[in-house]
Image (tube, rainbow, N blue to C red; front, side, top):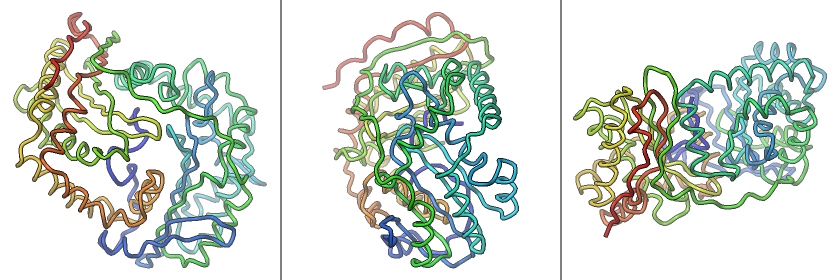
Length: 454
């Protein structure tokens, strides 16, 4: 489970389940992307692909966990878990039986900025699939028995997280980074807040958040435009015209360096580190994305992996990613190590991050990173589900509909000077670091400020 993820640190959207083969390469797929507007005014980005008789749809409403009441984080998460637990004239058991009988995949989630949904089905079952989605969005029961069952499941997960070092580290990191801003809250709620959430809270959330003006839709599969337009109107057409969202302020993450320690008697100490990132539409974003691949996003080839794992044997893995939200941005990394080597691990990470901030990447590293990021685009869009998620993410990021075609040229345009500037901007001020585990006392001491870069 990724406890941070508001959106995946990639340029194509969230992790996804491979559902249907896509026969076209990304450039060909891009040429087929249509901006469809239904008779009722529902807009979707759409790729018609009849390779196999399957349809994948991804959609999102603005709001997400930021719209949870301040004293009740987790409302949106509870709503997401309950929308498919009975609606219309179907109770929870019958609703799920119909999904299973037709092999319909329907799910919801509440991320930081969006209430998201996913629908996948065989072409022949599209009418029933879209109708079940319509009922979920417009007439969910929130039956007391179902509410308490889901509440118990959520609470059980939160109790597990209370002894999970990765969950504790990410929670504390967000608190340090964002304080009392909504991004500092837990999207899944807390052991204090979840018992207080009632049906009225969830119905209020639905009435405020699920509305047509913030709806974004992406569809890929074996359906023609006319048919899809009618399905979209039937599914979303009766939702309120406008959402009633609380305004969310832009926020910059707390300035590094800071360090926090959470004692926990577990075999492995977890280290989470990060700091302010680069917003998605900032001119330095792509340079930051490329140089971040060099530092911590390139798996076995990354600098952090080579320094922390290969040279020193401090950890099995270490990664670092860029995350961007509607109102802020972060870079976040994570690793795990022996308790008696936690301090050494943090020192090694800080040293490598300081080095790239001071020196930037080499031309060879930059060329290799750009080559990988361009080539991996094809693998990133090799299924209908992945393409649908990418098209939705592009919409949420307010990118142009032909971004797939433009993306590699944008990567190519990053110069060595651009990468060095982005590296200094991202990592020139040190780290926010959270250590969870049986770390020596030295690992909990405040970090010294990183030397100022010239």
